[in-house]
Image 1 (cartoon, rainbow, N blue to C red):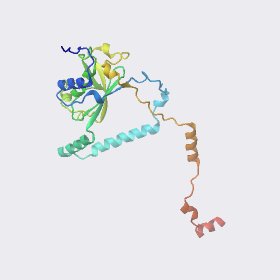
Image 2: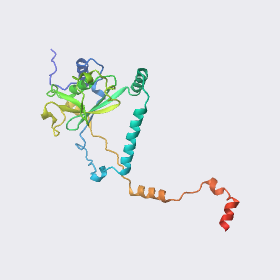
Image 3: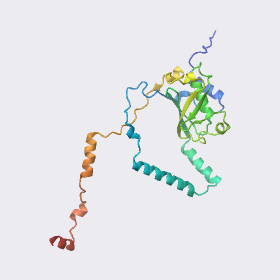
Image 4: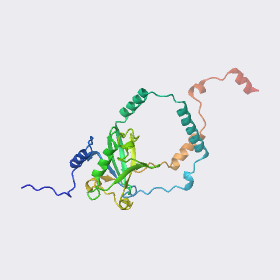
Length: 252
């Protein structure tokens, strides 16, 4: 006599993928290619460097460059030729060929991030189905919304302006970060671990450390030496004889 598996057992990746396919009538891979990132600073021993407030004050050169960039963008839009539908479709197909997949990283309130790649032709409901099937069983029925900020842009499946568009048409390709907010505010506590399945949390890893741009003293000395070093004449210049009129001027 065969016994049925307990309903609270952790489903396998194949079972999770099957559930997603049944819930959403679109193609979606199994959960074998997802990534989970721990909250920044949660388990990492790296402490971020504190920057002074003056670091965020733009310089006059930065303000000038920003203004010039805005002027160029405005002029390019004003002087751009009108595009026919055929040209627009050709440009869209070109971008779809270049970005066949869209990487979506969903950030939970505690800053745990769940990442997966989808076909750029998929709809936003595919992302919702993936996230919902990744939640714990006691939270799976909880309502949530995916959004971007700033400014806040909610990507609701109930919105006809959103649900009928592909990820590419929603301008999410080639990659985007979506924030997740639960309707139940108690689940939005930043001190609570993301309510993901244990199977998924077991794959969580730390985010790679950010690059450092601080120059070492040796690098600064070398750069100063290069700037202060006089220019050396080339081989062609050193072997070339001085003209007679220049020699006469030097003898005076």
